[in-house]
Length: 364
Image 1 (cartoon, rainbow, N blue to C red):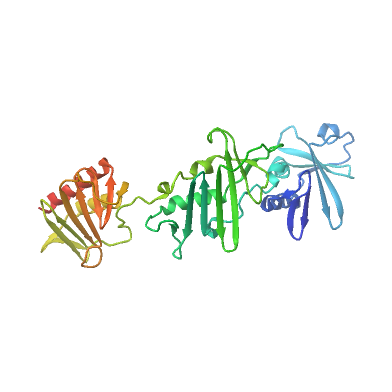
Image 2: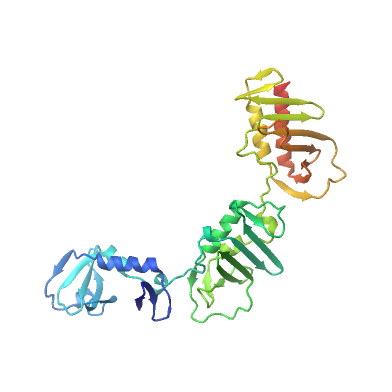
């Protein structure tokens, strides 16, 4: 049974719970816009139309009283369905699609959301998984930061996707007898201005079995999808932006190299120059900058290891005469950017070195 009070629909039977406002409005709209395709006057026996024992019965209460719509079987062509208004003898035909719009089960009509906050409203996120606690905060610029360590740069796309998944979590099934689950395996708290909502998750068989959830909206454990559980990080390192040099949105105006070979090229206007010589082919410049911009680190260190070997020093200028990025490449897979020390994957480092050698060969 659906009841509307103060403009809000609720389910009052067979359970008392919140309703999906959008889905019920669709049902009401389907009833209001129901149109008959044909009328069979005084058919007599209703059994050929499936109306002696209707497959679907809808009782509608309006200001003028109660009305009952009985939906029977499909016509021989299956394009239409037979219906009848209780108290009237004629049989009406409606399209089969209109019948489908009326045939709603309890699961489709109840509010299956676990969180009511929308992703853009969320300002803080707390994730607790065993001994792991991750606290994230959205700053004034709209960027996600780790509250425990501001030096960590987060991958905004990864965090945003996780928040969207958490806000979009829904119940897939409602166990008739909720299982005894104990404490949550994972707890996710989402906060906005004056609102805090917590989503608790339980996994079975290491997440390979059923996944259950509860929240303020779904107090008893419900069965949910496992995609959110898979998206929960095992640690803050899984949410990091592992970019080393961020060139997107910057106009590079200078590249200086010091090592076994020296190089200094500058951009003036829309042209590149090596000293006074204008460079007509700049593909190697763009290839090198693309490799540098796409570089991702595997690990960060507090200090350089002892086996770093020879170094090649690179300065990247953007707009100003002084270098924006002060980079040193070492043998194997180590590099520094300013005072930060990174270990790069061997394949990525090899691609970067090859692009640098190509740039040097083109300039010589």
